[in-house]
Image 1 (cartoon, rainbow over the protein chains, first blue to last red):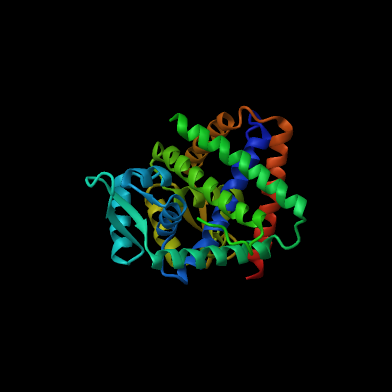
Image 2: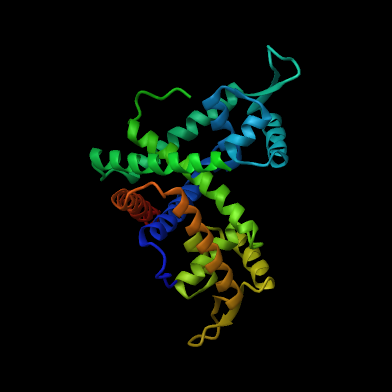
Length: 152
Length: 152
């Protein structure tokens, strides 16, 4: 596709590269998850629950940038599959909290390990300093995007 | 989630950050596409056709890392919506090539522009040199991941 000459080249490149990297990471991610019988949205939900301990439905939707209508189906299916459980909050029994089960925790650890092995292979020829530069660049992108999301 | 002490910190961070950046980019991407009445897989297919001129079904599946069974439905829907068209190859009439229509091209240009405006806002505080570092890091990641995909 022809480039629009009014556009700053670096921004166009960053957009294109994020899109292409995401496409590959999602393909590889799907391959890995296929071995564990969970879907990408289920993996993201499990990760958020593993990271934050327990979350209410509203908090989980916010972390995953999902509409709560979409997330309810997802959570029901995950509860039926024994990946998470609903528990009443100990301080306020009206509040339902979502928690990852032992089975969910076991699966997520295996998925993270498989992703780690994949990325270690991909980055085998990269020096320690280059890896730190990649972390820096991604950190900057992530922190600016998160700030922008919070403004909405 | 607790970190596995046997894992190299940078690799774990790169995996986590790519995942988080993808999540935000996809959410923002969905918001933008919502205004143009196309889905993320349709956008990726249109982009590939805009980039490569015309592609056979097999070539398109390869570019999108999709199973051809999934892509057939996608392509049928896009043809019905006037985003792409099927044409016989001029050199070999047995071969069907997919081409983006004028309407598809118009939509993709508007989507790219909206993504550009979004990313320009996000990166407003970033210096030219930092932007070049981000491009470098993403380029390195993308080229290593593409090489790895080609090995499969």
